[in-house]
Length: 185
Image (tube, rainbow, N blue to C red; front, side, top):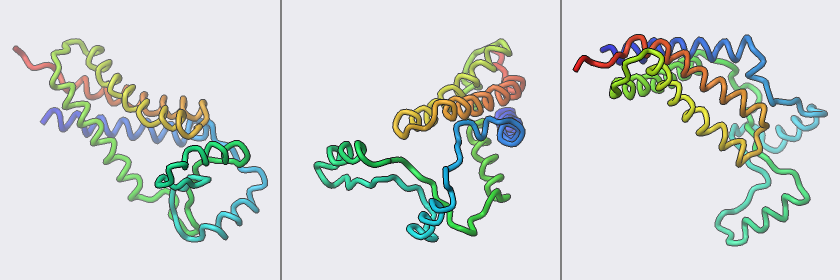
């Protein structure tokens, strides 16, 4: 029961932290830039993609083609490339479903952290906080750094989001470590 309580309370503080980070600090927009001459670009996207929401990679390469990588390398020399998340007009902004999904994700993460912490013999409070924080390092680096490596996400964006994720585990760890203590021998 203490693992469940620790996980839920950890999720609450993690959710509060990520909300503060996204709404009250510049971290959420670090590394993002406006598109110069946005109007024609957005119009061209809408004309091309229409109402098909999705994640797009351009220029597209057919992975069935044995020469795909060589063709892509040649294309990259003369044409722009990247990834694009496209949401058509009328797509929802921030919805209650999204907020619930976010806190549910954080509950899964903090329940895993609490469960792993319960398997240790770490006696000191700070060592238990450190343990949960190290889980956060792994989680924060997993996706953020890969996007920086493979998709050229800006370094400052990567650092900001790595910090947001990591610090979420730190604040959750402060709560989880207070509740999940080693069992007496």
